[in-house]
Length: 367
Image (cartoon, helix red, strand yellow):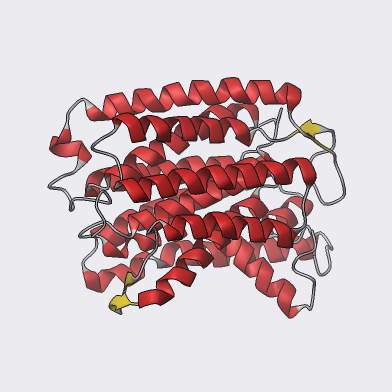
């Protein structure tokens, strides 16, 4: 067990004995970071990179992006405060420095992407550096407890597996950030569920860090939904995806909840399914998967006529269903855990059928 990742379920829960004043203090910190994030976002409305409309995008007028700078600034400020003062919620020194360094690298990489619009391969290579930095600090998984299989030791394969997981979630969140409030709302809901679950199981770092990211997103969201005065840009979407993936790696270390690696995939089930489904569909169609397109399920249903705000709210609902499934998954006896992951899958299959019917009715052809 890596020091700082958890101290066992319930007996060290943040909510029943650590400190009765801890939760109010942490919520106050989240509110403070939300205000700080909002101030930065308001500044970025004036100085952010302009995002011009085109046939692939949902907006019809020039709108600044890089609002995610507020999210990044709030989270990094919170993490630095945690590193300096949060002795209980800290990771061990090496892991903590790895989180901070990898987070800063991802922020810089994605901000450069906003300004220069670099190619996908260059972006992927830069993301790989950030992911490798996190893994090199020790933030990787080698034991996976899976429903029906028990604990599986994948040994050194955990290194490429962890890197792949970090990169896939990072890019999935980036790809899904095409409608007002969609990526930000999903991130906020995922963070709140992660904080609640981690607090219950004694995962002090994931609990506190999730609230830090939630604070940053909370300060940004009013400027982006329901009407967008600014977009989060790559600096926001890639950063949120990367940090959530890091939380997934850290969550896999909870004592008594080793299967919690599935927490982030469950919470982001709508996002990950959309990206995986679209990637597979385009590969089978022989399309260039590195080329920009508007064939994601959320884009197709918007083109078919569903209001963009409702599409975003649907994805918020997917994240909520995933969170409730994650709670049920961890609370269920071993024999009942596999059925707990079925609701998000069933919902996504139903969503796919609905999008497909709507696309046909709107004569969108092959999308």
